Image (cartoon, rainbow, N blue to C red; front, side):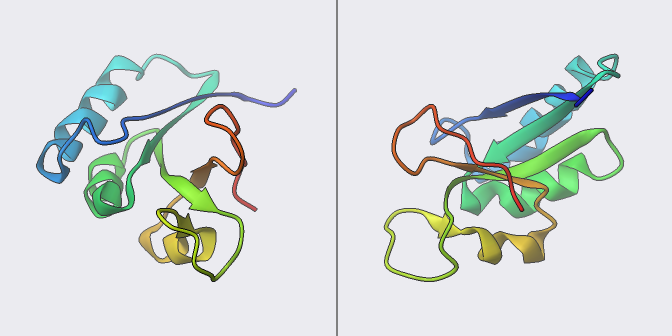
Length: 105
């Protein structure tokens, strides 16, 4: 059976300077959740801080608002390929409507 995923994002509600604290709080609040995968999907500007804060924890990091195309003028999203250099585990993509999610390949 596939492991369930708890994933969340925060849009523009957290500043980059607050990212480490939030990811650490998520890690602490979910440390007993052994049967699920926990992922924080952050805006692109927060990815480096989120990856650093999640290091050594069970929390994965994803990028929010990504496009499935590798290149192109898809404002305001980022490409999935641009996130792989930051150790991003998954992508939260919204190709057609806010509730749509596409896992990283």
